[in-house]
Image 1 (cartoon, rainbow, N blue to C red):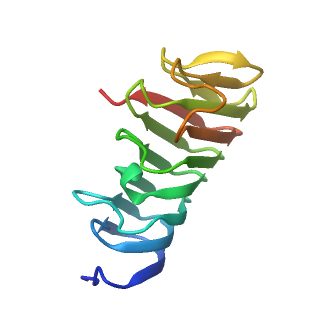
Image 2 (cartoon, rainbow, N blue to C red):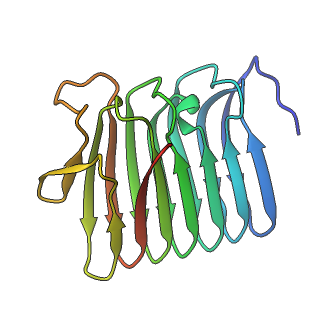
Image 3 (cartoon, one colour):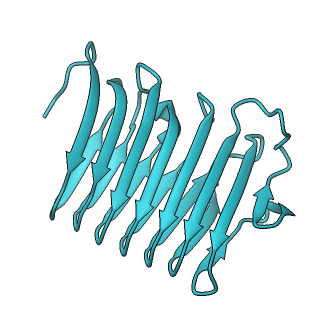
Length: 178
């Protein structure tokens, strides 16, 4: 399906089973909700950024898997990631175009977060249980109780990437983009 780039969209995409590839390059998406159910979904931006700022980018993986590419090109102010028993990968490898806040919840599944280069300010807050596993990169240093930041982060940083994550029995893995 092809959509016009001249009209703003509020997309609510629901997948039960199967596979989907969604390229949003060059569109005007003001809000996006994706529920992957048991499907394998790849969504993101291959070449061009979103034409407008996106308020909320919500993605949910119940039993399936979701791979989000170049999420920075979405220009989303809020990213909400919900993983049940499935797998999710969020690629933040590029330079953020707007101030990003990422709220994530992991049940018994896996969440992989690919971080941008080290000059992008990053703050991570993680609430975890003894049944889970959280793997940080070397660039993220503990600055408080369940709080981590990289060297570029300051309290008044411009366009910081802020993560607020909950994990109960699953895994969260942070990776460097290179």
